[in-house]
Length: 38
Image (tube, rainbow, N blue to C red; front, side, top):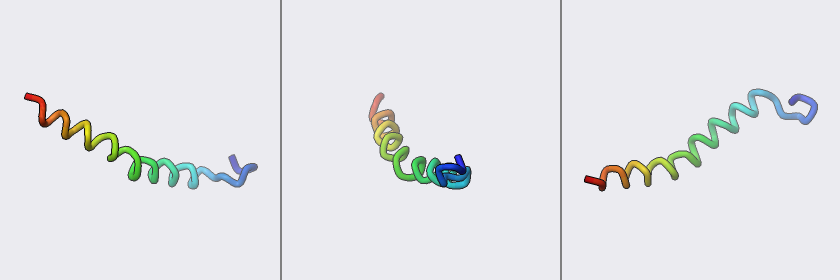
């Protein structure tokens, strides 16, 4: 990883950033759809 200038911390920061920015967009509609179902 270090050869390409990409450290483990960068990798973790990327995952955290991905989780914060992308997951809610998919999870919120799923939760809303679930709540509307009887």
